Image (tube, rainbow, N blue to C red; front, side, top):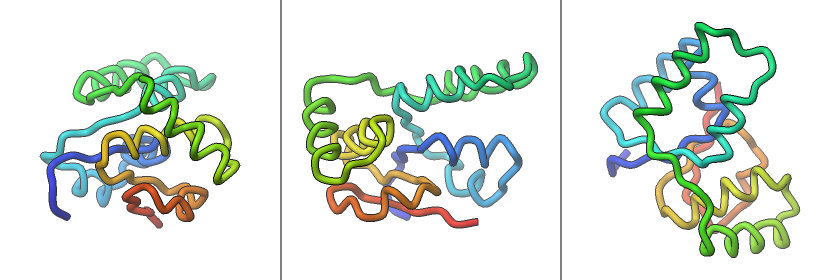
Length: 123
């Protein structure tokens, strides 16, 4: 894979935390970007334990977290209207369009979005 920048969906980070070596190797020495949506999903998980919270915060401190801006809003509206996905997925897709980096996800709902560079991860 060329390029040093990757945009990760929440499920990929969860696979990483569960010990998935393929993901670990894939993102090794890459600059990781995530959406603020992913940050919220990770930190807002109801079942999170204190020891896991520290691990998540350490990981997040090493990522570039992308907040919403007017371009991402417009991209999100476009994706929502064209593909009718859940709003968080539309925001992630809109952010991927904004960044232009490959989005790595295991969520098959993204596979039909032609406007993003997608790497669909299958275990």
